[in-house]
Length: 293
Image (cartoon, rainbow, N blue to C red):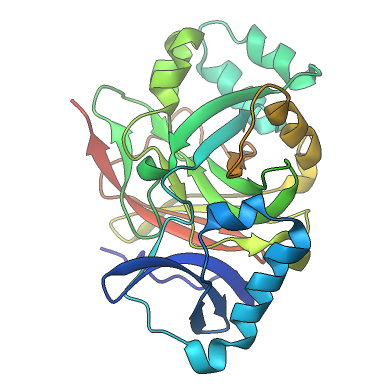
């Protein structure tokens, strides 16, 4: 099995990580190769005004020389109480792919150009898997794909706080059979991965290049690239629509859609390794398992 736990490709100079240290789960700031305890959870940061949150992160970075810790594991960078939402059909390739799979593809065509975006619930923080942890394909699905996406961390005010690689694993066969099956195609055990860490928005800005590689028994069986520059919607627009009918006092994460969709002849298999790299943000790698019955 390929090592999926420690992939530094695309890593930013600084990141915000949720880690396990000496049996305890805590948030830390990684500066270079040194992790320093933050002293607050992500939910607390996202409740604060931007300058105050930035000050806490900067203090942990400065203190790293004396407070550095050796982490046992890097976990999914969300708190258990967080929600992850997702946007669909934000790239032309996504529209085409979903038309390809659907019994009736016209709704995807219409939503691509509509004022209101497609937004749907993806996972609770407790259900999100982190770097190196398995993502799942449903046992009752015969056509499954990863969806490499830029995850945008939004604070309690709905402003962009940071960025994180994400994987919105999906059953194309279930969704394609009937649009009303979307929740079953998208929301199930181990269907959402985030990580390895959050890069604050003041250190990175779109557009971002995104790359997907899928390995099977050590051999690359699919690879593709895209850029957030080709998105049909802006990040503030997606945030605005999400917050129009919901409040997130602890902040939230929204996956912004995929521009890389494998063809109809490809499906994920247990044992595959999925790698999602976003320029300047990081690389998320996960093995694949079968889930459910």
